[in-house]
Image (cartoon, rainbow over all chains, first blue to last red; front, side, top):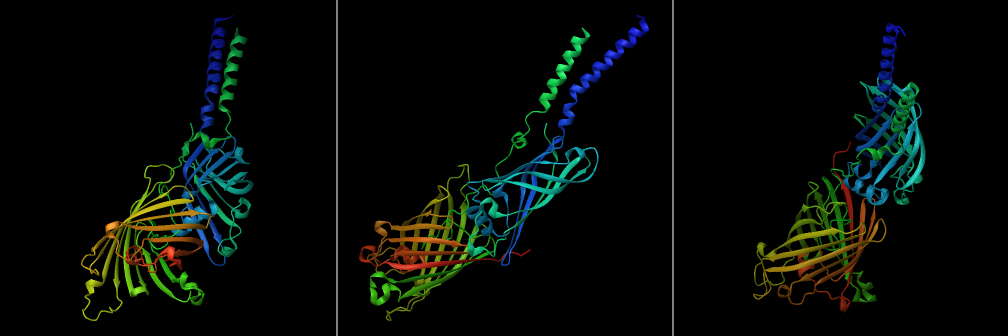
Length: 196
Length: 298
């Protein structure tokens, strides 16, 4: 072959090797799509004729994998704080039995995960569905929410309802008018940490 | 040769793809899920109330929480049917207990029995930790002062105010063994300014022993025993033995019990119990506790 062509051929091979190498090394950038937080917040509100009950948990662990859309939450029940100490005691001892069931867990996926990229700031409405386990009982839950990208950091918000009855949380008749049959739950998590 | 290389590179790429799409069904396991919660790593609700039956438990009230307590002790069961087994007679005590901080509480009360006023302060010195056994027990210190305002029948001498005073100090040590079982020990020191006879000591020592066993989420069975150390037992008195049931409903705790102590202030039930279980000097009684949260409303 002509020396010039040999040269081009060699550089092409080199370039191809570099490209292939880059392609092999690439996955680590895609892995930056696994993000998590250890201080997400979950709060709930119960509106009933005799009493309103409200509590907030700011130690929620949540992981989000934007590449696959998987989203998971781990909520320590004892980390829910109420304004009234006695209410918190009853919540743990009598209703949630947090000694037996210390955590509530959600494992699900974000349907529209391929529409979201970390590089593009914006607010994306999403649908999340998966299994929610509270008080030892697992139920399928689907809700809408938002994933917002701000400066490359994702954050998720959603509000949905749960029924204590669905999770075998028994409410005695005597306090029927103190605890709502449907509880409003709100979550807000900012995924500021990346899983390597 | 080229195809070999290409094949090798292709294989490498494949292998890499495989590694990156590992089983991600448990993402939560991949991050260290910390189970310790800063504020809630203490054992809570060792007992359902700040009193077991007659005596103090290691529990205190939350901050700005008011506990209104009404206690009744009826007459002796051996009073027979004529006295409706004691229901015809009753002594009562009502009290207001208040939580200044989650560790410090105070209270004042008044009993009809010997017209006694009492006031106390209780402070939590140590709290049992949950899960880990770093701190195995909860310890509280309670100090009670009582004033017996009943007019003396002995008109030959004037009773000074100081002669009406009784002090009781307790170190309460409790452990929540399981979700259902808690036990406590209360070494007690009492001081009375005025004694009946010169031979009687002003300082008395006793040890309280108490426990509760939950039989359902809201109901528990309690027992309490105050053992007076031999040389510090006033003549004619017995050790206080009580058995009871606690029922908790929302903001109330109802405590129903049988005891051989007629009085409800420390100086009476610890040091001056005259009833004997063997003789049927058993008083049926109850305590009702109602919690009011006086904290700022949102």
